[in-house]
Image (cartoon, rainbow, N blue to C red; front, side, top):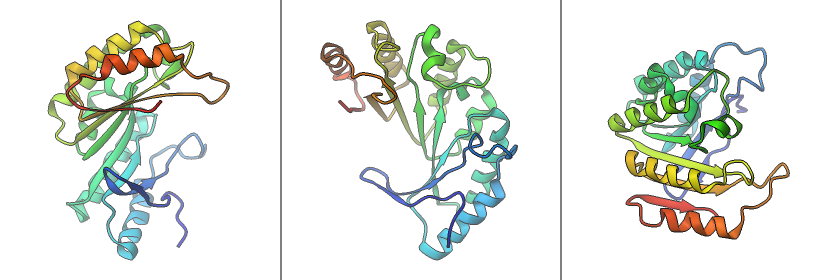
Length: 220
């Protein structure tokens, strides 16, 4: 059976079989609500035919207005499959909203993209479609991390000439020490004309994060 929203199962060495759900409202211009029932029907059909994956992997929509649909999807899944684990990727900008933080507490694995600690370039490296303040986002992530009982994964992508500053590294380190995620990943973005980070800067990143007391992956 062909699926509109489900993608091919991916195997993760750490988390097992992941069933990705692909819903991007920017690719579907006519969609103005999150299609929770349609996505749930596909998930249910998949489970009936192929069994439960280790995680259903959802991408949090960038629009705050669509989160009520995501909340409904999570509850539909847990109503029929109470032991099914759910993972969600969410942009850090969403955490300035208390209602979104409450919705995300219901997942088992949460990946947050956090690329900058500098207000001046934060919007350049973290997509946001509503007004935001970095201090509110950081406070929201802190509050969320205090109560979250699942696996909290944060990753940072450095872009040469944008957020590759010593100050950004130092503030990220301080922030990671404060919130204590389960795992933290660092990489570099070298597509769309961006060059690789300097070796000196890469070495500084490795030296800065090597002693932190949680799992760290540096991908360069």
